[in-house]
Length: 306
Image (cartoon, rainbow, N blue to C red; front, side, top):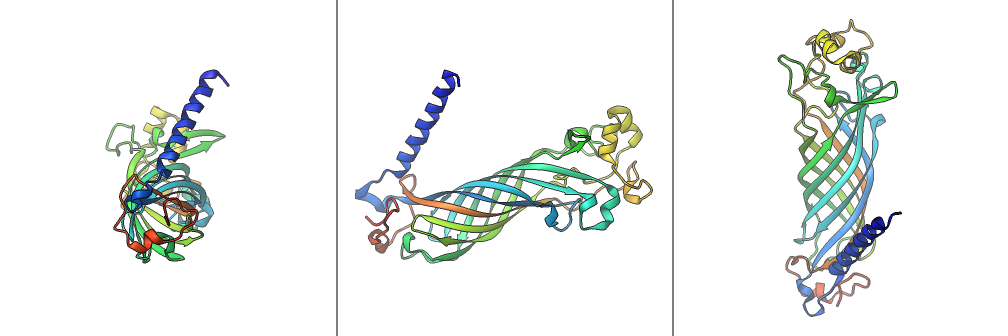
C-alpha cells in the first residue's frame, strides 16, 4: 500500500478514536446533565409493491443491511437516524398475478436510504433507563431521502432503464418526463425491542416506505411508439420497452397501449432484526431524570449508577 494511503488510514483511525473518547467521557460531578444515545446495526429483507408485483410476493425478497443512531430525548419519544442498503426486484413471468405473465417485464434496483424517524415506545422509564421494560413495542414515522436505479440484463449486458426511456421519455411528442433517481419517501412502521443487558437491546422491525413515484420498477404509463423508438434508440431499447411474450395480448401492444398503472405509486419495505448498544454522552441534555435513575447500580453502562 502506498505511503499516502497509510497516512489516510491513520488519520481516519485517529478521528474515530477521538470520537469514541468524546462520546464516552464522563462528567462525574454532573451526570444528571448527560443524555442516553445508542448506535446499532440491522440486517433483514427488502421488498417492493408496484406494477410488477401487486402483493409483496415473497419470491422477490432480497437482503438488506443498515445502521442507526438513536437519541433518547424524552421518556417515550426518541429520535433515530438510519441508513440502509437493499435490493428490490420483480419479474412478470414469476409474479403471483398471472394476468401480467405475457407482458414479460422485469427489473432490479439497489435502494440506498438515509432517514430521520421519531419513535414512540410503549414503556415506562420513570425508574430510569437501566430498569427499563424487558420487552417494549414501538411505532415510528419520519422522512427519508433515497436513491434507486432500475436495471435489466439482456444477454449478460446490464442496462439502466431510466437512461433508455422505456416509456418514451426521450422521444419527441406527448411522453412523460424522465423520472428522478433521487427522491423523498415517508417511512413508517412498528417493532419491538428486547433488553439483553443494561447496554444492549435486540429488536425486530417492519418499516413501509410510501414513495411519490411510480417508477421504482420503470413501469407506469403506456408503450411508446415502437417505430420511433427503434429509429432513434435501436432494437435493444424496443425490447426493454416491450418484452411481451405474446404481442397479440392487450398488454403487449405497442404504440400507446397501457403498460402500467400511474394511479398507484410504488412502495418498498425493509424488515429487519437489529442490535443497539447504549451509552451516556454529554452531546445533549436528557429528559428530566428522577433521583432513582442517578442511584441505579448499572454496572458496565458508562455514565449510569454513579
